[in-house]
Image (cartoon, rainbow, N blue to C red; front, side, top):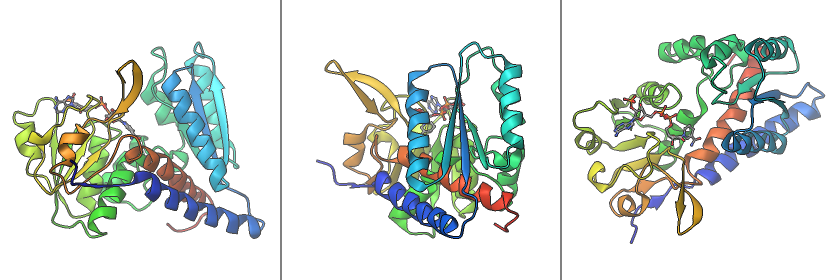
Length: 293
Ligand code: NDP
């Protein structure tokens, strides 16, 4: 029987999106230009297709002008860069997101580097990565790690100072930026990866355990200190009893018996990622309007 509180990411995300919708409605009432987000997808990866549709649907719910650009699998890098250039120059577009992964013949980093820093709502451009590590308030910060911090705060309160956070995974899109963000919240941060000698032992020291490895249910109770807050970033498509099922990187049932709180999959970190994409679009809009952030 689970004893942990279930952290409802959908509810936290809904309230964030509702507050963005209120801000956009205010802009509309004042007759101002509305924020715009362009989502670019190349090819027909089914998982990316679901993400892209969810992103534009959430935009519409908030009143942000979401546009989808779907390019053929065989699109050349020159054509994709040309589209990015046009979106960079379009004053109605505040945020640009190129859905990853790209087909193998396209150089992802070269494409991400081409997005204007001020429109880089995924926060993957090297300038935004640098700004995040410098603590620059104008940084556009990757969405999923922001969601992790907010979910931890929803359980523990806004002040996380002094907490020991262990992050399992060191990717550029989740693990590393999450480490920077928790550091900025005055936490002590340990990062565990595939070469760590004693991952489970390190993880057991965590007050807040963030798991982003992409391995279904890898983290079991032997990785978790009783009373820890567990944030499961993983989204793994598996099959159970002949049915498709999404599971996280954490073995939810057994870990929920000793954690104080845990995020479910789905309904935990996933909805927060999209909410922060909208939040980043609002920040980019404000900066593009010359406002202080
Ligand atoms: P990556 O594959 O880029 O990174 C995985 C990380 O896990 C690597 O740093 C790797 O270490 C580490 N790792 C792998 N095996 C082990 C192990 N046995 N012990 C410790 N560390 C290990 O994945 P992402 O960060 O892109 O994604 C992680 C998960 O999060 C995936 O399930 C993905 O689908 C999900 N995700 C969910 C999002 C959401 O919105 N909820 C958004 C983004 C991702 P090393 O560096 O040494 O190889």
